Image 1 (tube, rainbow, N blue to C red):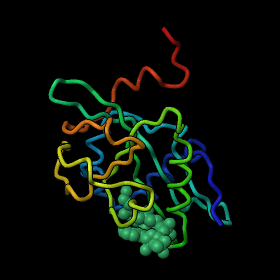
Image 2 (cartoon, rainbow, N blue to C red):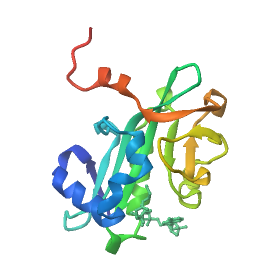
Image 3 (cartoon, rainbow, N blue to C red):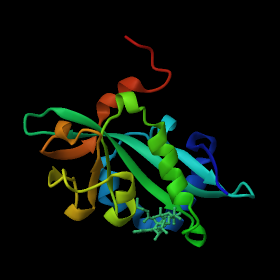
Length: 179
Ligand SMILES: CC(C)(COP(=O)(O)OP(=O)(O)OC[C@H]1O[C@@H](n2cnc3c(N)ncnc32)[C@H](O)[C@@H]1OP(=O)(O)O)[C@@H](O)C(=O)NCCC(=O)NCCS
């Protein structure tokens, strides 16, 4: 049975160790890291899963990114992932619980489209697909079949553009005084 807690409650060193175990220590070279370079994960949408002994078993992080179109306009998106579960605990439902927590925390009344790089066979169950990302580019190597988006109304998705960090999100950081 998983207990889900905000990721902000977890020691960052433990999160790094879990990500190293799930993806390998060379994970920082992945294209996903370049897409969200320089931005922080969103605390309201990022979670940790603890097992029955309160051991950290899985994490999910969600990041503010944007697709910049040919006119230079940035279309904000939420980048989901990495979803990571300790190798010895995979296949027990922690990943699905983490996905349900993160997607459930996205306000349906003000949802931004969500994007991730991952297997359609896993993420398709939540409505992610490559159907609308064929014209999207990444700042590094990527497999078109694994660039997936999820959106209540795909008509609003830009047809083409380059994914990168959404620096405009800095204005929304918690504790930042409104101008
Ligand atoms: C992918 C990952 C997050 C899934 O979490 P998990 O806790 O192992 O998976 P769950 O127990 O929640 O879900 C199991 C289901 O997912 C399926 N599944 C797991 N990994 C899959 C994959 N890569 N592709 C397709 N299906 C997959 C299982 O077959 C099972 O299917 P079922 O529900 O129909 O029986 C986890 O295995 C992991 O951390 N892997 C290494 C890191 C990684 O690749 N992360 C994803 C990229 S961001």
